Amino acid sequence: MAGTSVDKRVRALRDWLAHQLRGAPFAMEPASGDASFRRYFRVTTQDHSLIAMDAPPGKEDSRPFIAVARLLSQAGLNVPQVLEADLHKGFLLLTDLGQHLYLQALQREERVRLLYHDAIDALVAMQAGVASDGLPPYDRSFLLREMRLFQDWLLDRHLGIKLEGHELQETFEFLADAALAQPAVFVHRDFHSRNLMVCAGNNPGILDFQDAMCGPLSYDLVSLLKDCYVKWPDELIDELLAYYLQAAGTAGLPLVADKESFRTAFDLMGVQRHLKASGIFARLRHRDNKHAYLADVPRTLSYILDCADRHGELTYLARLIAERVLPGLGDGNRA
Image (cartoon, rainbow, N blue to C red; front, top):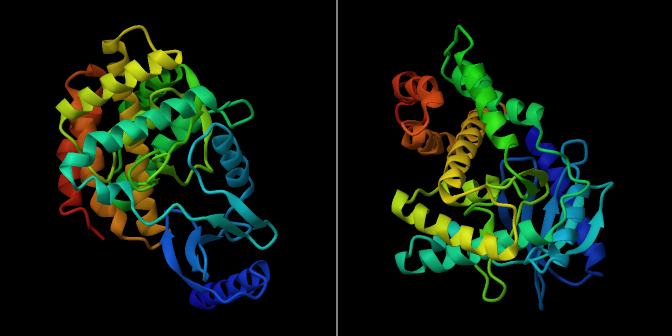
């Protein structure tokens, strides 16, 4: 039944595209999917390559995508341009930023620093040049709700781990306090190697920005440098952190007092994000029947263990992950 529904939407999208392209011949093939209900198709005409977005109404709201795309474009950032939109049907036609993901390009060691410098420059431009007024606030209730995904979906649903006591909730509260102590800026929320495209000009191309909020300064930097899909040595992360701090200082961003304080804020923001992400990966498995993300959970949680010895408040969480969660995951594909 689900397949029939998908087929109907594909047919409807083809009909919509035929009208938008005024009957010109075109080919359509899957471009990518993501962790939501959105799907993307590459549309090739005689002269152009475009992207069609299928965002089913009732499951996805495309208005934030259109609004944030405009904000980012006005700040000079490289994002898809919205050429046509039908919010009632849930279809958008976009410019195509190409097929070269950062995740793939980062396999070439000689390009890593250049690609990250470009991404950090874009991040600083985004934080300094895109107003966050009017965006939803990354407030305490939202931070806590995200972290509870770890408990509800990874611990409880996926691993069957039932906790007693309040230690985990106390850790969540500590992490929320740390996040809220940071200056608030525009936050992309998924600024990482699967949402950045390698582009010949104005690199990188930026995707998947529709869930932007006003929130902690270090959040997007964590997404970029402590990526759930690729991991780098601490030495490189420290080097790129220094590059960010210099660029952000030049741009006049409201940084915390000193480098060590910023590193602490960065580490703790990472713990919040990685708890959320690991819970989402488990939810994708059980709610949405998307299994592949489970393999990324051990890497995602390893970031928490990497920094736990620097923060005594993380002792309980680190022990829980090391002694119960990672052994329970096995190869990361426990059913």
